[in-house]
Image 1 (cartoon, rainbow, N blue to C red):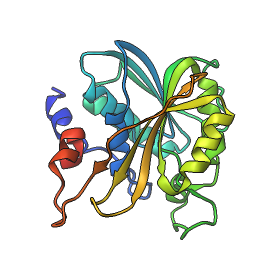
Image 2: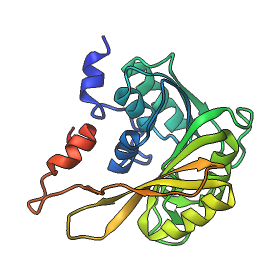
Image 3: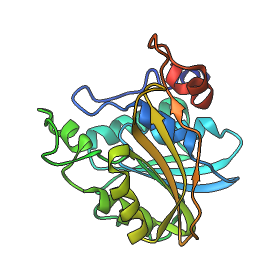
Length: 241
């Protein structure tokens, strides 16, 4: 009964009309993460639950459990609706809470922590009239370092942390990672077009890991005629929908 909703993902997901709308970045990171047979996953700032659902659909043969943490009650309700709609009630749980106050589980509870945090500091960019969108886009409640600190606290030693973030703030992200004992191990840049600078980067780090970074081939999203590239669709089939 859930097959149609899963086949159409991400189309049809419930999103509050006044809230932040998920972007391609969330779909791409759901395909970037790697999981083992049994993996406990935490998504910080889950929004409408798009990343947990994308991960579940990418790995139907794995025994995954995912927790999505979200501060906005409207987004929590939307995420819960989407989880039910796609039939992942037993695997995905949504928790209302603040990333800055991670009191929902003991430290080291997860094998993998993921986040698509707010991209810009408060006051750096045009503010949104809608408060919930403003908090999703800008570091209002928690800044980047708070997201990284919570990710490091909640992941087990030798566990992995994956973020998707602005390429222009990559140096800041890496500094925050290393200050919280997260060693960058894998990185992939996302480009709008082949001849355009990267605006977004996905990075995986290991808690307590040794140095050694793999720079993966980038994702190029669009051809010159604005159609999606075949390589981007192959990498993340969700973006074609």
